[in-house]
Length: 393
Image 1: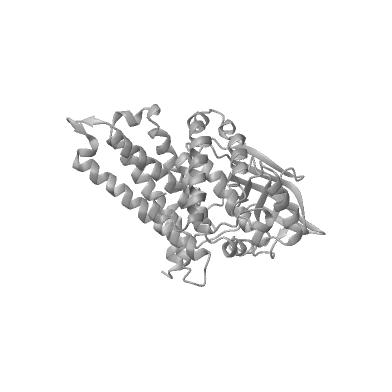
Image 2: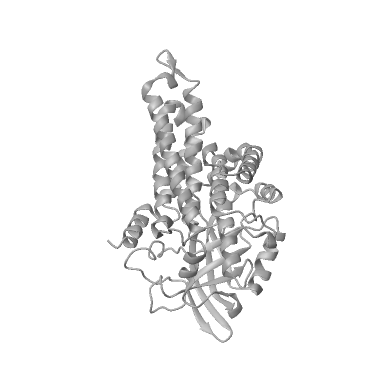
């Protein structure tokens, strides 16, 4: 993290500690874990436990619940630093950090005692938020919003759920889940969905296939299957049919964290490109002495700084929504950061030449990771359409 973006000594201390954690615990393991053929083998409980010992896993919770009460901008900075070491590790914790914050705000006292209290005490507890389905991903964003296929039907004392989610981050590892299901089939996804709190092992709730991904492999994504799953009324989060509105109200900075994750990949690419340009001789002089390379490195830094500024604008406003929150800030910073990261990754490959195409250089992994957030946390084109809707076009 460039010093100009650090605002106070508390942030500096946190980020210095995170950087040391990444260099000690993540970077030495990342390449070997990424290379595992079995996607489940790419996940590391050792890294999760090391992060818990540092206090990272719970840092967005209030001090009353055992956290550090960090704000959204500091969280985005932490997420970016983690992604410098590995995108998947960043995603594991970005999801957990944002969901923990949502849960503290959205759950009632009984639900908090049943979930966040054991979450804090369990060094391996990570979290999932479950919306995406095989036939429903961007449907909540586009004008022709359709209902979710996963349905929860009201019965005496609770709900009976059937259906399937997929692509869900952490879901084969998580202890607690916020699951969004259609509870009014006559309404579109944006209006007829409710949120439910579930714990791993709940009857009728099982993990399906673990997806084998191109990149971001240190984070697992899987299917979740609901088969006549009875969910008691006390597990309903907020009001019936208000699930997505609850999510938007309590975590408007969610998408900005995704932008921070992919921005960390861009930073890793830039740092690798700069180091290579300062040591590789081509045409009788160092690459850094060639004007074209120098200009390209400067453009990388420009795109990184501009994307980071946009992300921090979103997180600042998310924590103070009455002071100029714009709903496009919930979409566009991620789009910008992911497009910048993809451009920077391809430039990194070009700067390295044939060496970059060889796996041992580490560029190949960054290319695969950089592609992830062109689609994850909302397909970019869809998020642009969503923002256009917000602007009234």
